Amino acid sequence: MSVIFIVLGALILLWFIITYNLFVRDKNLIREAWSGIDVQLKRRHNLIPNLVQTVKAYSKHERDLFNEITEKRSKTINIENIKEKAAAEADISGLLKSLFLVVEDYPDLKANINFIDLQKQLTEIEDQIQYARRYYNGTVRRYNIRVESFPGNIVAGIFDFKQEDYFEITLATERSTPEVNL
Image (cartoon, rainbow, N blue to C red; front, top):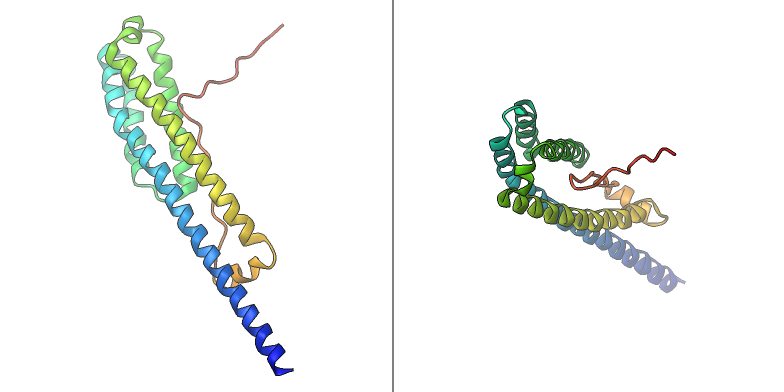
């Protein structure tokens, strides 16, 4: 009878160890996934001053927009919280969309090789951000399911594993859906 209790106790202990290690693995995968997003956001942040300077050379009338983009970029760099970072990056995306609307008024700028190259780089970076965001959110989803599901939620509660936030961001290169009125 005592052998059964020893084996049962060993199995429960083994389950706790395996489950704990799965949580640790998932947390590290989330950190890795966030690192991928962070790298792409830094690339985007490094591109923004060049983009602003190129447009600024053509347009002296959009000074407020340029200042706002520069200010938001500076503030966003130091944000660590994922929800706050997502909101700040969404603001930057909106401002970049506004910047591209300004470009529409300057045909010479739209044809400028430097601007075209910067726009192409931004599109590539935005695509990489989207891929990194999908990987991150998939990793967070798997981890959050483990945190909420029984019996893993017991280990999560004991070792204080909490749900992680998803990273939602609109990209500057996303197009809004056109309205069709018939």
